[in-house]
Image 1 (cartoon, helix red, strand yellow):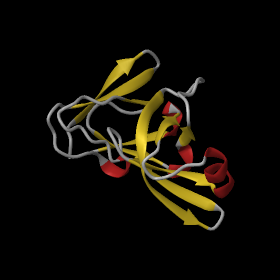
Image 2 (tube, one colour; image 1 turned 45 degrees about the vertical axis):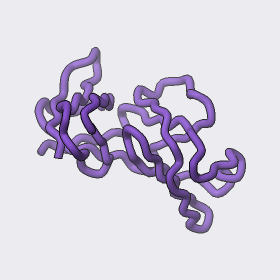
Image 3 (tube, one colour; image 1 turned 30 degrees about the vertical axis):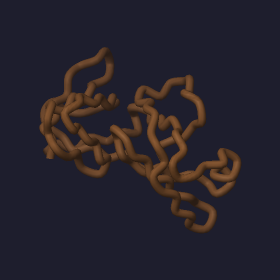
Image 4 (cartoon, helix red, strand yellow; image 1 turned 180 degrees about the vertical axis):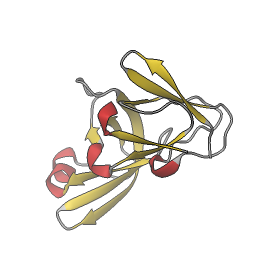
Amino acid sequence: GASLQFQREGQHRQLRPSIGEPRGVGCSGLQVGGVQRDVVVGDAADGAAFLSIRPQSVSLHRAMPEGSQRNVWQAPVVGVDVQHDRVRVALGGALPIVAEITAAALVGMDLREGDQVWAAVKASEVVAYPR
């Protein structure tokens, strides 16, 4: 896995993966790939950690969202899995992750594989586990 260290950023800690590691971290799928990616975490101990973000904690948007979310990035939709009234939307790109939305949201947003969306996660919804 990637080597990760937390650094203070105001009241939050910012996760800074080491450059050049080939694959990501824990459940979040953080991929470094030679480029530094930052994920803001609400509370974590210093040192290396695994990250976990629940699919229900990831909100999807057609335009860049405004608000209190500290983690916002653009990503391609790489998969859509309808499971009754819930839909799992797989995102690719710099931070591959799965978002869970309602079937009504899928229809309302007219999401399809290949679309570009904005994903947002509050820092308080990112859980860090010491390695």
